[in-house]
Length: 287
Image 1 (cartoon, rainbow, N blue to C red):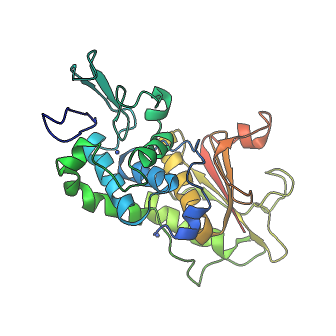
Image 2: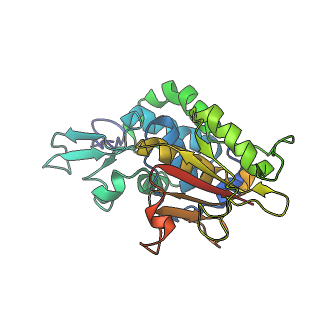
């Protein structure tokens, strides 16, 4: 993401279908979501959360792929240019330039959710992409197919019928559908559901069967693969409305869709199950 003087050229700086209701639950500008999955999926999730939709969402993901390949840690040094005599650095998934955008701290530029919010601002909500080299050069066009696949992979249009397993310790239809969808999309087969003993989780856990003998929670096992865990957590949060998700917990972070303005944040009680017991699996609760 580089900017050159007008005499040299245009300004060059220095990157299951999510439905509107699901995106609306994570408000543009409510930052802090620790989206750590890279690549097209990570870019799509972060851009969607930042407020991009429709063609601007496609553009945001394609520009990010062309700029950085979707690597949140991407870093490229630039030589001195007019206005930047000491050179500059293009940073993160959308290669936000350190000289022309010094207001964007490194901690933000290298974190996809925060960088997506800044990209939303700099691009005027997806209306003006002339600040990105990958856009003005046309390189982003070559990444649209990959962007479309990533956007589609994030999304669930509606909960289809025919799901749910019977009691006395089965799964509610929402949890059962999500279990199948997670296996299909992420290849994960180790997914915990109903706990019949009422003692393996905290009191009132959604893992315990309700009056119909069905549980309303999943534990998606990811082992030490933290990036995979964030992909699953991000997917569940992005599709919260369609999947009827009430909250998601992973790696000491939680997003609660029962709140007025849901946003990822650290579990507030460091001694709680939320903070201590969700590093090797993603917990997802459903209505």
